[in-house]
Length: 529
Image 1 (tube, rainbow, N blue to C red):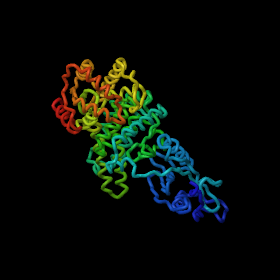
Image 2: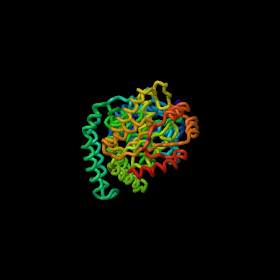
Image 3: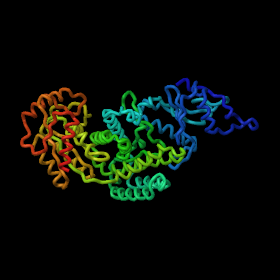
Image 4: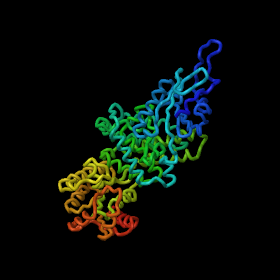
């Protein structure tokens, strides 16, 4: 960073010749200093201006200056405000992106101009960052069809770890906080009613949101008191996630107001899930949601997820509407605003939940089928997939890929795993989400218990039983890498020897390729539901 410590002789900054009193420094003077070749030893490669920042990309580094502005949601008008914001930005973003955020430098005055971290009067503060390859931003990866399931699964784990380790903030969140956010959003969106959005549509959405909020206001307050309001990221859309050393890395968390980042963890998660759904990446959005839930066990949070996804979609609609207004009618912003607003309404639509069970010996492809069924037959965020293997790892506080000892598969542990499966299925179904349970179900009593859950709730049930040739199952299990299941060839032998008794579920030939198996399963599900 040594090349950044250079002076610029600035005509805009000099002592008052008549009085000898230093003239006040305007931020424009500092921006000209940073834009020139003297500040960094070379002219910036790029100067990016946002509504709250100036970002200078210089070689391997990026430098971010807070704009001296006052907006509805922030106030950067004083130097002290900007100092606090710079230091806060580094502090909160080092939780997820320590490789990017290096620190804060002062821009100081001297008799010949400005310099970094000098002995003179401090006139500005600036965030120092390592530059990353912007082609690894998740929105760009998706546009190139390079956003793979493994990256989404890794991202879910990163978000879960952030939420589980973040500070509890019970003084924020709750129903009134959400209502305040909604009211401000509706006020802005109403400016575009009858223009970008059809006449009366904003008022209709606002009314539907108020009904949804009223239904869940008490639950939101209970979640706040129970520790689900935490110091989150706050702005977790796909273009605020990149790859650093191949690892999904959220960056640019909200630093300018705790009320915007101290939120319900489900509101934080709702942003990337909603963004993926808007991009029509339904499978990836569903995978992100399900992997996060496996990590955190927050299935009760599904009650408020549609509300939060609708709110996030409304926020994005507002952002694009404002950009459309200020960019002299850019068609892309108009389409994006309308797309997000339509999605905001769609998230509030309700459908009756169903319960699906997928059984069979290990290696028949249950998990692969469950992931695909979850988005092939269900709209928006898809169905909740409960995997016995993932539940077992969660019970033992182990990550998905860490093998468990044989004792973790004892009879008494198996009972705990199934109780947890039934509990989580009940929570998800109660929230209005459909559920797919993925387990071997070799015990007829377990199959009956799951059917009983559907019967008691008076919801449709469909059981799928996967069957495949012994040699193929053995081959699949032997070829597994990086899999949540610990089943090996010996486990398969034991399962086949044990048998499953009289199976009454719909039998599916699992010898074919995944698309063929999916087609067969979907045909059965359509006949059931």
